[in-house]
Every structure is written in structure tokens, then in C-alpha cells.
Length: 271
Image 1 (tube, rainbow, N blue to C red):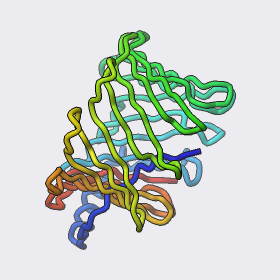
Image 2 (cartoon, one colour):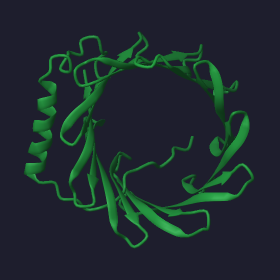
Image 3 (cartoon, one colour):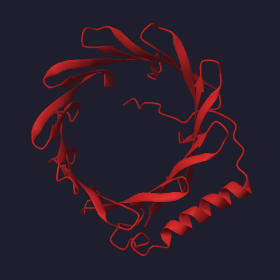
């Protein structure tokens, strides 16, 4: 089965001790709140317990993750920095153990959103249906060729909205992704290229096939994304995303501006 190569952009970035200390102190300051710094005793060993979000050196919220006896994620609870419940996500699975329903309950507004996942007899995804307060808003259909995802068709209010096509090279790596509107007019295109040292480049083109910029993604030998750098067409860096791991598990995703200043980051904690 082909795995899509969604990897971080390649780029050189200096990480100084001051920056590391800055990130650590900001994280600890958020954890001082006992509501945020709760234990993970109900989380199965090795599983993700909490996900924290930071912006401008401030904790803006976090997610608590809960699992069933089969170690499948059953619930996510989104909370603000003081622990107040903002949103609850519930996951349901079919008899084959595949995700069948994702239900979102927004506490403040009382609104609900649901995604229904439909598969064929071989457990291959057929479509996703999207609902808001019980009303069908749209759906996405999936098309496969020789076990490779080669197309998606998106509907909104039961009307065709867009078409996405995926093309692969002889090694089954994603080569070209094209996005069309409902009348098959090209809207955007990506061209993927692969180089030594686990580097992937994604060139971005608009509806007129004009080059608009590119991404450089750098991964380690295990396929873990390390950096994802965004550039304009004139090679000006606009954003860098870095990824760190602990024991092979994602530990932190950091978003930096063109000058290397941290804009935001996400931290993952496991039991």
C-alpha cells in the first residue's frame, strides 16, 4: 500500500540553547495550573495522553485523549488553559475495527458536526459524509487504482464542488496532485520531486500554471518528518515547521517565521 510522502521541508535552521530554554520555560509555566497538569493514569501505557497548544509564549488550550479496551481512541476533550470544556469529539468503530463515525459536540454553541466514514467489502475507503446539526452538508468520494488513491471528488450541498487527481511515479511515490473545480477547470497543481538524503520538494502552481513557490521537506532515515520549509517563487523563506521525536513518537511541532522566531508550537505527552 502506498504511503503518501507528507514530510517536512528541508532547510537549515540554528537552534540555540536560549531558544530551547525559552520553549521549556513557557511549557512549564502552562503546566503550573493543576487543571492542565493532570495525571495520565487512565491512559494506556505508551499512548498519547495530552496535546498542548501554544501561541506567543502562552498556552491557549489542550486536548485530553481517551481510549477503549482495544487501545482505540474513543474521545477527545478540548479544553481552554483553565480546564473548561470547549468541545468533545467521539469516535465510533465498525465491526472490522475501522473508524465509522466522528462526532463533534461544541459545548458553547450546542452545535454538532459529524463525519461518516464508508468502506467497501475490502475495507477500502469509499466516501466521507459531512453533517452539521444532523443535516448533510457535503461528501468526499475516493477512487483507487491498484491500491493507490488516484482521485477524490468533493460535493457541497449535493452539488459537485471540486475534483482532485493524484498521479504517481514508477516507484509509487506521489508525483503530481491537481485540483479542478466542478467544470474540470484547473485551480492549482503540485509537482513532487525526491532527492538524496530524504529530501522532497513540492512545487506549487496556480490556475494559470504560474509557479508560486515551493516546499522543501526533510525526513530522517525512518521516514519521520524533520523540517518543512515554505518558500516564495523567488526563494524567499516564509515559514519553517520543525518536528522532534522521542522514542520514535512525535514530541513537538514548532512553527517559526522567516527570521527563526517561534510563532506557535504543539507539544505531545504520553503515559
